[in-house]
Image (cartoon, rainbow, N blue to C red):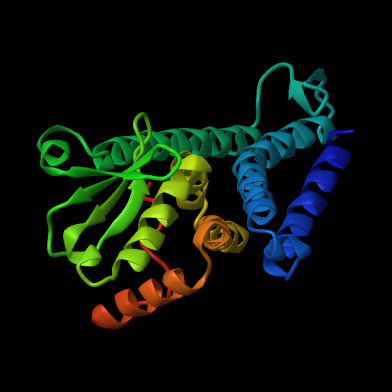
Length: 256
């Protein structure tokens, strides 16, 4: 039975990789696309440790050891474990520990990215329609992002806003605030943990890239629905041209 579950899991991983790598209808709906990519990353994060544990359990079953099922998935072998099983279980534990350590580092980085203390005192709040607020930081750098974990905020520098006319400024501010309204900073933290832990897996790298792209597209859709596409496109063009070398279109994505 364990061998069957391992085979099913392997087929599932391959299927997820094909879904992520190929064009899908989700790309035409950014929110749906982001959900698909986040679920894909979650599956990728769970699958390798599970496969290693099941492989160890299958090894024990094949050698005639007895045991009991865990969560209806894997057989936990009774008695002493052989070297091969110990190596597989140790590998699964190492993956879990490494993912946990990366999660702690990612959460810490996200908290450090929050605007607080002196930086918050220097920033000026900019009220937007709907009662939302963006924070404008005096700096010549061209930066616009939404970040943080406990208290996520939308942040834009004066250097970036100075490049833009009022309509374009409004588009940039709305874009970053849309990230907050849609919960993107926390989504990026979750996705980023798996992407870093399993960056050696092509499906994880692809899903991470697509997730970030879909989040940007979802925020863009919010702006277009509110004020139209023209101010946003003009702002994107001006910011891209002002950077050296020119960046691909898109404001600084939500930081993790």
